[in-house]
Image (cartoon, rainbow, N blue to C red; front, side, top):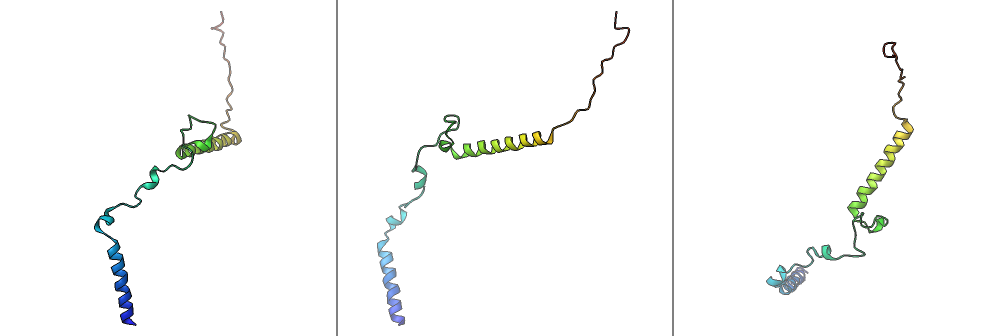
Length: 100
């Protein structure tokens, strides 16, 4: 049993080492191949096509979405908090010397 196991390991090692040549190990298989392949329509800047968010670049979509949510939350806060209440009364002061 030990001799058959050793024979199988030697055969596997021989098969793997003979299929690899030194030049084949230097060939790059798939390095950076996904970066040049574009799947689907090209993405555009949001100012070039403002009515189609599905065509926007991802980073532009994120910035605009976060800005919109921030504006919505801030305006809701200002509307429901009522802002600052001013209790100032403006009085007009006329002196007799200023009337001629």
